[in-house]
Image (cartoon, rainbow, N blue to C red; front, side, top):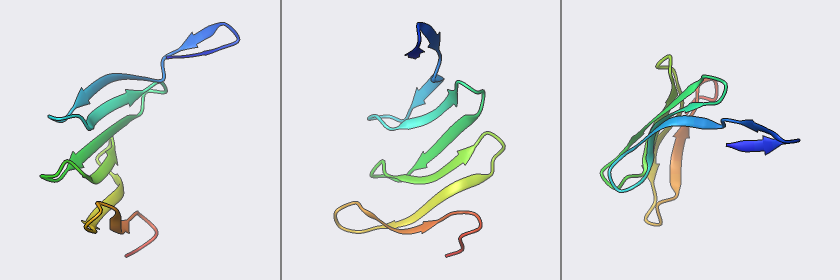
Length: 77
């Protein structure tokens, strides 16, 4: 929750977590949703909105767990 000028607003709700911590899904205060898939090391591999359209697809990580291949709609490989 956030507070501005004495008004409280919900920033996110309905948070669901993958085992061992990362957020699996949530609903933003504006009603939009976020869904996250993870690999066996619990690193994000796909993030999508509630419509099923993805907006970030991470296909590879280096030895330090930094993303090395990232695809986003409209950007190409």
